[in-house]
Length: 210
Image (cartoon, rainbow, N blue to C red; front, side, top):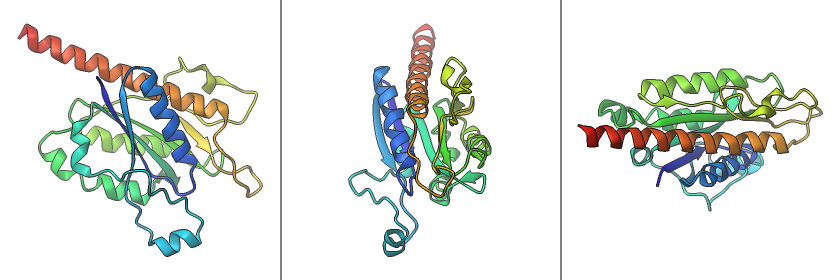
């Protein structure tokens, strides 16, 4: 069975909700999908004061376990057009995996959130893709076969680089992922799982032929 890790960081729960939908999509494609988070860098008292969503029930991933999966789907909010420091800190520790080519050929994908409609979603997705490419991963996005990203009747996240959501309602209030954005996340999870399964099958066939 294809092994998929949905690895995320979420301050206020928006990316956590998207991560659940991504994992659901991967499972619908027959994959074994595990949801984990990266460690929080903000001290707990400060995090509680800021209203962070603390999720002790979600296991924290280790860097070395990344090599155990066929596909890794990263979820991170945007921080000034780039990934959150918590996710960057985690990925910066993957030098050992890079040195031994442990992630080469595995599937990598990304989803994100921003506070506003043009808050850096695409730059965050693309800059995170750069890290995946340095690790030798096969980058998979959100193809236009997901027709929800063509919608013009509502404000919605989503791009060919990955699923996304908007976290602010435009008046300083909280906005949760919409039905369309969650559908994009499920589609991406399903698509990544299928690509990973296809790549694994091709590799097994090549070994048999060899």
